[in-house]
Image 1 (cartoon, rainbow, N blue to C red):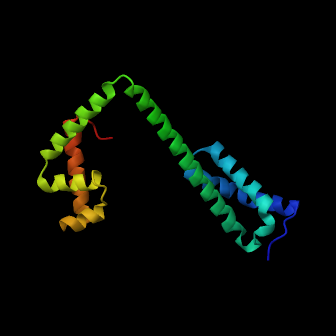
Image 2 (spheres, helix red, strand yellow; image 1 turned 180 degrees about the vertical axis):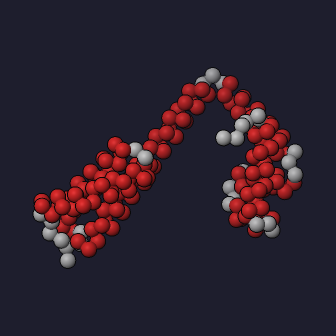
Image 3 (tube, rainbow, N blue to C red; image 1 turned 90 degrees about the vertical axis):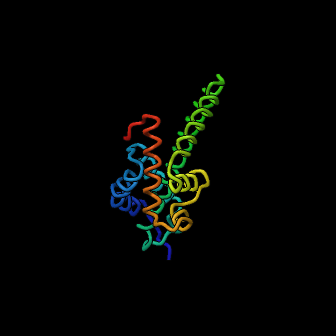
Length: 168
C-alpha cells in the first residue's frame, strides 16, 4: 500500500532523514556543497514520487537514492577530470616532442623489464600489458596471488629505482 504524504508528513521525513542522508552523501563525496545538492535532489524526487513509495521502505529508498546519486556524481567528476587531463596532453602533443618523449620512456621501461628475473617479467607483462588479474596470473604460474603481488611490487620498485622516482 502506498503512503499518502502530506506537507506535514514530508516535513517530518525531511527533519528525520536530512542530517543522516547528508552525512551519508558526504562520506562518499567529501564535498559539502555536492552532498547538500544531492540530498536536496533526492528529497525533490521523493516529493514527486511519494505516492509510489511504501512507507515501510522509505528509509531504504532514500539511502539507495543518495548512494546512486553519489555514484553518478563521482562518475561525472571523474570523467570531467579525465577530459581535462586528456585535453592537457593533447595540447602538449602539438609540439611533436611529446610522442618522442613517450616512445623513449616506453623503450626505456621495456629495457628495465627485460633485465628483471624471468618470472617477474612474466607477471608484470601479464598483469599490465595483457590485462590479466592477479588471480589469473597466479593460476598461470602456479603461485599464490600474494606471490603475484610480490613480483609486481618488485617490478615497480625496480622501475622506480631506474627512473629515480620516490615512493609516496
